[in-house]
Image (cartoon, rainbow, N blue to C red; front, side, top):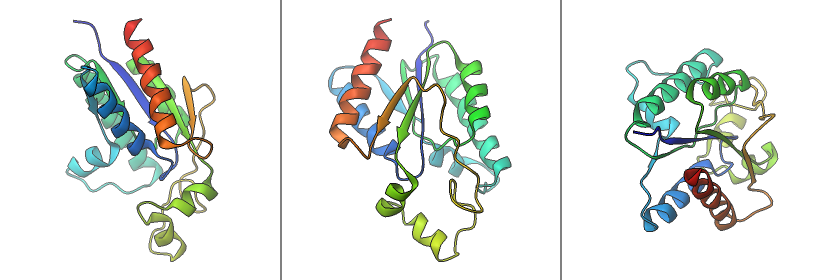
Length: 177
């Protein structure tokens, strides 16, 4: 059996990764394509050890997600991975491990934009001092944007539907290759 395609998202919290993944999954399911979402928060929650957002724990979680994707791709043709994945070196290791049929999708939005959206209330907690390890913020792990993403979706400049359309078309194109 052919290995499934893995679309590994990266972007700040609140950039729109999960919303885009759900929209693409719904769109492709209606077109008869089997799609699975592997959400980093879900994988993090299944670990026996509670993981923080320290650099070490982020690396550990991202590698665990990559390992799960490696197993799932034998039975799942399309895997969407909406995960912050802030460390460039870990993404490069993931690409080396999961290629071919691995694509890095950069969900781009500025820190100011995601702080204003604050969909999960995390940035408010950070500002109040209730959350010390906020990725991309002072005191937290730095977010390192990709240098060579396979696709960039700027959610500050595009509506959700436009990002879903663009990614769904990209996936359909890659699935035919």
